[in-house]
Image 1: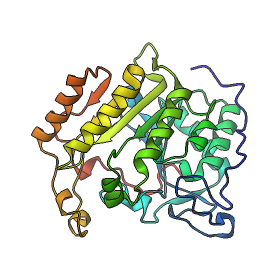
Image 2: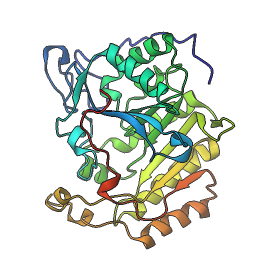
Image 3: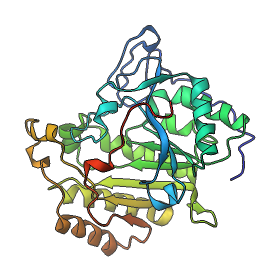
Length: 314
């Protein structure tokens, strides 16, 4: 991987966290004075975990593992979130920008295939700076932006020269579902415009001799029980819009945590996705002509696949 010696601090004009307008919610709270918006973050950076992770797509984890950095807080409220402890539960360890840069370098030293920034959008001003500091000190592996899809295109645009790979969710094409399960009725439109910018920045997928992605976009979709139509609509939109310029990752790992069963109106999420449901979605993708895709095999809908968020590596 070539170093980005020409990388420079992005021009964040018009985007700020004081008052905060970094995501589609535009909470406009003053985070520097301790105010918190929908994501729950103030000006401090909190991490749930920073460690090698073997369970991403093969071209991201490889044999050595992806250098995952799980950030606390989230601008969605997905009722089925498997990382609820850190996304909405307030769990995490505080770190500085300087420490964050050191963490990136430590993960590289441990053999990480990349630095995998998981839900970094509400800290993106600080994260971008930490990446540049780490690169100045020898960081050479790709940077992965691993987000929910609910981002501003203006933010994504500023990551040119900083992020190499976008590993993004595309959860919904149905606004009603987006509101019901994630409190974000504008999710479909936000995801469309942010994905367009991701594809523009990352360009055609590029892999090294080991089959590890160095540049490109992977679009994830988690199939929810009873919602094949939503999944098919997402797949059709992504493939008809971008064809082989992006990889699809079709996931059947939805895990029904006990708290979901207690949420009014979400009882339908109280079970796993059936094999028949998942195969129908995969078959649909094949019928469209999708070739660049990852699928999951076996029973991966287990709580044992959820990392422990005890501040490791912070």
